[in-house]
Image 1: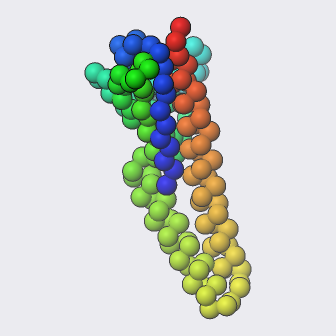
Image 2 (image 1 turned 45 degrees about the vertical axis):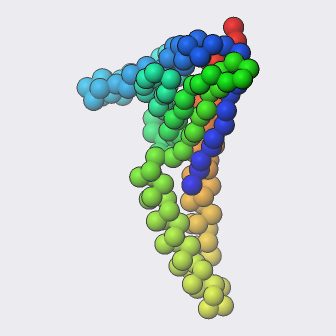
Image 3 (image 1 turned 60 degrees about the vertical axis):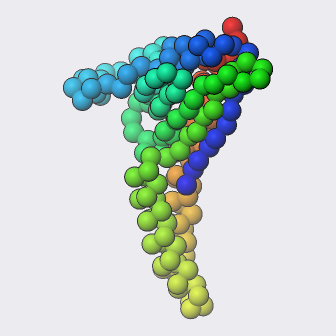
Length: 161
């Protein structure tokens, strides 16, 4: 399953880096707010992340219009390092989505592999193989671009001003 870990080194003090992340994060909307916001146009210039920054740790996700089940969950911590501050970040797919995709790929892959082992290349085995490849492509296609955007936004937030 998609998993991305990286570290950002910055000369900023720890508290300044935490404030930089806090500045681009807002609390997730309540259920009532999310219903109201669903029928509005997207606001430009808003904070790009939803989540919480507590102490020197944070748990975020990007604030996107619409749905993306493969949107990275972002967990991280900010700590002092030898040359300033280190921001350690881990991005991953929601565990329930990962479990569903693993189930899907296992079932489709097992079916396609079973028919190929019998040396019977048929439309069913090719369709199963195609579904397996499509499942991987959709998962990575939804995760990787969003992970890159999130990393760029986090790097800009903790960059020395």
